[in-house]
Image (cartoon, rainbow over all chains, first blue to last red; front, side, top):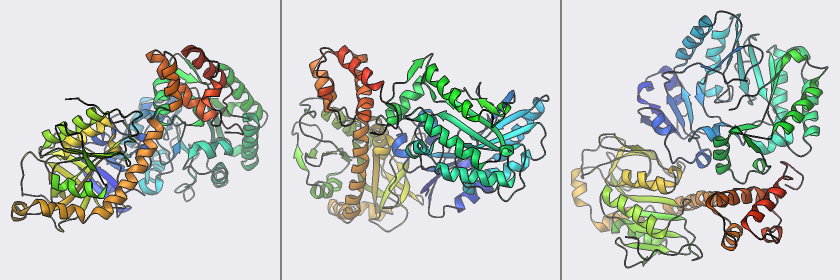
Length: 332
Length: 289
């Protein structure tokens, strides 16, 4: 429950602001000049704030669409991302957002049309070849939909576009508006997945893996292209058995033709980000294992990364076409 | 004037809350309710404390300068750790009655809105939230829906540096809504306004203490580490390593006594080496964890 909404003066009269605010009739509204004066303040305590984040309604002024980090993609050479929201309803212990932002408050940019305009410009500026846009980079694409209505507005923008794909990255089982819309073959609903036992410990506040599998099965039945994202791969006791069970349940539940793509990536953090996250959660079991640091990146190291990747590929081999499988090596 | 600094480490004083209050009449109900006693007679501000509950209180006097000075003074003098909550409570002007209503402040600015702070983990279930304008001079031209005081902004800016934004709290009781009432404010009236809100203030303090406990668990250095630091010489960087590796080790092996694990260590390097060796087997989600 959001008890406080900070609203930029400039978007006070925006229709979308009024709609969002109306969904929290008991919340306290506080007018601000720019979202950064709340969101970027030093001395904020992300961990305590995460217990009760406020909502910030703001207008984004620039950088609506940005190139995706190198190594991030599902088959196309040109990859971009956009963030209509910063921060996430969930509290996943490995999430880079907790090391990147000093605030756990949610920022929702209400000027969606400026994003759409920039998306159209990006498509026309890249006249050759396919382009993929990623929407769930700084937030979960679906989890806040009931409040933001972002997808309901955004999916029509991509309707009929022949050269542009949209990836919705999520852990949410909130499936509207997808279930009530005609599926779009260029919109991939990509679920972040890990073995149930690990998700129970790490994906705080997020739906269980079994609920996620049930959700993606429903979407597949409806005709939406499904993405499976094993990113990050988590090294743990008995990890092979755990991932084998996970892949088995997914392949059993999901018709092969509904799988648009599978991507996987190792757990990696820039050194500074790892240090920030460790400071926030020094007693987190995930960080007990001795990770290695090389070239400013903290990771399990090449040996473990390769072993895990090879194992996962082995599980998928012969079942899913290798053309649908992508390694994600982006360093958040 | 950092004289007679109290030795907090090993002194049994478990800090939890530092109160910074402008007026003696605002402080008296707090002093009485939380059984604080006058201490530290050489201090330049009146200071009260309760060692059992870990509370310190300083009476700053009116105005931002005094609030900033008192906040810094008590922090330096008592070496207040970073997990302690800072609370400023007192009276404030407001455009609307009822007088005596208690608010938590969620935003503070100066009159010209050139400085702004957003303090506090919000306790909206216990009391309403509002904004506050900190002025240099008393006034009575109150705008709707904003409180007015003379200390809040400076306190919030300073205290959040010593601790964090989420552990910096401002609670204000409406004392007046017009010039006539402002002139009539007497110490006994102020005491009464605070005293009538003590039930809510007790609940607040309980909630604040829970947050403090969580932060203390996160930030405090274990006694195990303190013992090792006193036994061997650690360079500054090795000390940082020790603290981090110990936290990871303790999470991985919660039932192993540190003294047993390091029984054969003869130097700081040995301790770090032993922790490294053990952490190699600290795989996430192993059955015992």
